[in-house]
Length: 446
View 1 (tube, rainbow, N blue to C red):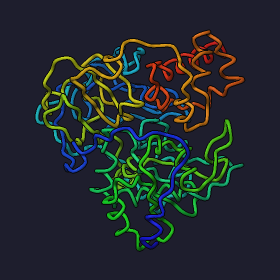
View 2 (cartoon, rainbow, N blue to C red):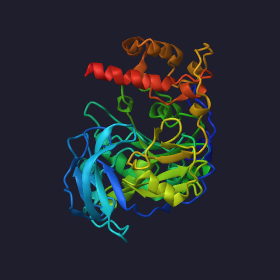
View 3 (cartoon, rainbow, N blue to C red):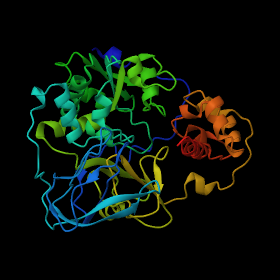
View 4 (cartoon, rainbow, N blue to C red):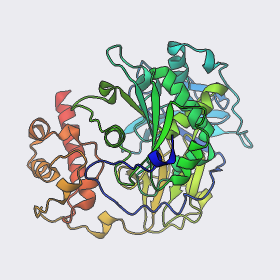
């Protein structure tokens, strides 16, 4: 593919251009953090049934050993992030405030970073079913934030015909740069992972979509794609939420996923670059997912950067390692638009955690505590990438008309990107209203 096609930038309608704040970390190479004394490993780190614990209190485990097995088709195992002894298994409060079971692992001093337990497989010789099983055994889920089990996504139903794989390298959330650094530093892992994923889904081609503020990543990948004519790179406009799978499909293919449908309905499957990079690294080595790269940044951090962090590391330990000023602060796991604010420094990093953002200044919500009535300005309507009417939905939410929101105003099409809340001059927490409405509708349906 020539350079002209790379610069044929594509995009979607609506969206926002929030300040990027990526310069703090985008130019700094990935570093590795040491083990925390105790790792807290939740059993529910993915969409679907939580993993089933198979270890006991006091048991010694080795780094890479399976400590929780998949519990059903929509589930994956969990592998020990370090060598040590199981301290206890009890409930914790997760990042979203819910109670969930977790394994507490007391890490042995001077524990090696080398994976001690592996599964010997040759992914190049596996058939489709064996490849899907190997992907499940690795414990891989979507590392971009959705945490959907990768093997399940790649197990395409018989009535679907997937021809195109879209690889999401947009990383449109402000502050986050872990995907960017992974593309720069491990492009060979990413390309290998794409090849495996194309085999698993029987896709004919793959398109890596990258926002045009990461041209160095595009160049890095282009240099390695001469032997892969079925894999191409396409620049897309830097805009939020370009990284949403529906938006990226629209930008790259000018196709729309049908209402209530999935990308496979139009012959497409979408994967995050970090996920496929991990696939390309783990599968040839027979390893399970024990760690991931996260962005640690924000005005409250002395040494911002991208760090390899063992799964289960408490965020308080990370702050000690990178230098934390303390004071009035807000801790966000993920990005500022769709991430979760947490209050406990014992909250652990999970497979889906892409970043730790620390703001030691009052956030937008803290600065503007007053919520004013809707002024009918229409900014939320112009910003919504799904062409919804957030203002009308907000009024219905205030009136507790949750069923009407879903049945007549397409509430379930909202993927909670936060554009409406961000742009609202009245500071109405629209996306929070929509989350509550969805939760209540789910409870009533159940």
